[in-house]
Image (cartoon, rainbow, N blue to C red; front, side, top):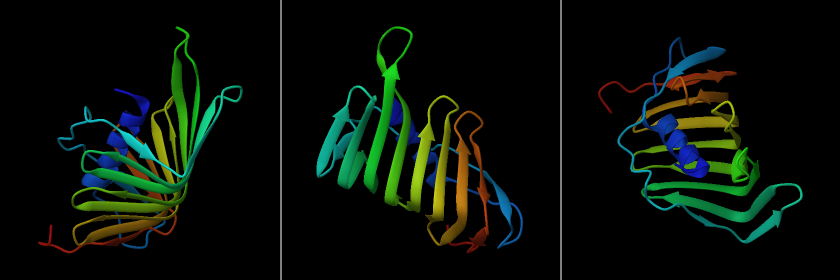
Length: 170
């Protein structure tokens, strides 16, 4: 599985299943997340107004109306920076993916948005920052920051967490 596919799969997990602990508007809430049946073998398509690659710095920058799609999942943002470097075998591997400006993720019945997001492959962590909003059906949770660990399959919402639960609507 490519790093970008792992990133999209992880984002998919964030938006598919979430349950917050604690009262609405708490300072922090643990989030338990799960991955539904997602076909990550589908091709990943990236569209942008421009792409610049800096081999010396080891990064690629997609700018302007960036759209990343895989199957029914779509991720959009203003700018996406992909940092890469050679692994022990000399292959280029993605190390970190940064998303900036109007980061939005949409699945068939889920959506999320944030001002920015970072996926660090070494520690398998995704961090959504700034005006984070995750919705599934009529249920929504918002905060200043969401930290999600791929290895443990769980995350934590931090900073003025607000939860809206609509029983029986999902």
